[in-house]
Image 1: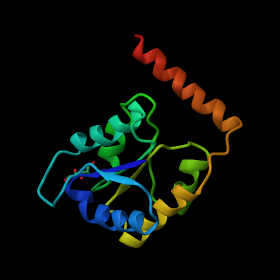
Image 2 (image 1 turned 90 degrees about the horizontal axis):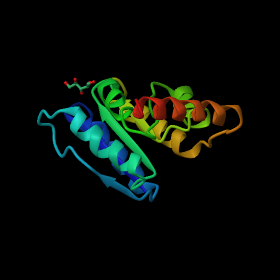
Image 3 (image 1 turned 90 degrees about the vertical axis):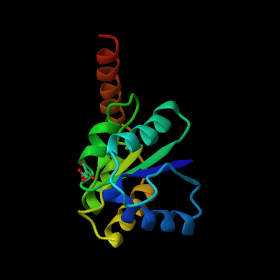
Image 4 (image 1 turned 180 degrees about the vertical axis):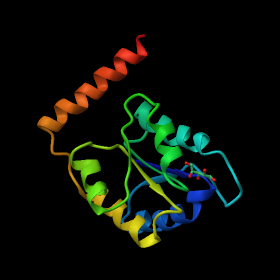
Length: 149
Ligand code: RB5
């Protein structure tokens, strides 16, 4: 199950991505925002990253104006690996090397075609494991050290 959220800066791109997910029959829950009125991106990052962190959702997509605020906020949640992507290469690496469980994009940075393409690449790519698994384990170890401080 996938959860998706945006602020007002990402709302338009989110509607395009929702259409793509429907076409691909990806089971998805939209956690808002529901229009172009100004809202605060941490509120929506918390909904999506909270669902991924708790295991309620397997994957998430977050979109704000630049993608920066959403990625900063989402990465505060244990177990979340939120990757801000800008091109096809970073979309592919986000999954193959980082096993990103949240894809983050900037609605004021990308065209709808770019955003949809990056989502498709991320969904269709596979984590390579191996040395990359070791690196993710090190991220988890950092997280555990910080939490137990
Ligand atoms: C909202 O104006 C904007 O700051 C937000 O969408 C995002 O770009 C923050 O990182």
